[in-house]
Image (cartoon, rainbow, N blue to C red; front, top):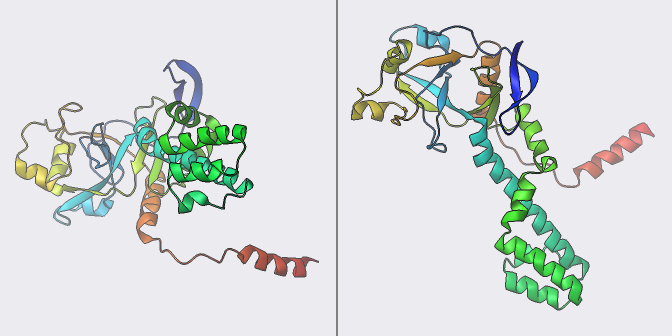
Length: 288
């Protein structure tokens, strides 16, 4: 196991924790499946540095002339995933909980069930509540209703930062149960993490393979090159093409398994809502 320094929010050394031995050591000069390359792009993350995890089979890349392109999955810093994806997941949950509170208060005073699903209007909801609630209860409801319809930045921020609210998302991410994402350690042994975007498949011309294997400088690309390759033209991050590392077995195979799941799964109708009760009847008969 490799050892890395853990870091707290301020970036100071906090504790030592173990990192899995995910990457080949040394300088990587051959572009193969699992190679991490720089100067990549992602539609959703245009303003940050993006790397790529090559997913084209090893045999295709090893035999000249067998393929005209190779493909990669974008890799981003965990922090950017938190800001873009986790933030939205938490805000949806936050809104859902607010909606449930509003509906429950209305239902408890006999103003209707799931009223927000019928009338998505603050004025209508407040009018219905005013006719049923006493003054103090109505004032509390009005505040809740205003938070739901108008938003409350402080309440939202407080919700986002509570560990109890995001711990289940982290559990899903660390077990790779969020099917569009794959969490992996950083290759620079810094204690940081990256997220591989499993549903954002990118293409490169096979001719660009030589650029990465020979660390060719940037700046000589023409318009035709950018048309044929999903490569970044942002000069802010790297001035040459480079294979920064390579994910070794069995991790790359596990990533490919997670990747393939996104494109091979088939949806089917769910069981009826009362299936649990139906099965419980059989269980009771068998076990009694």
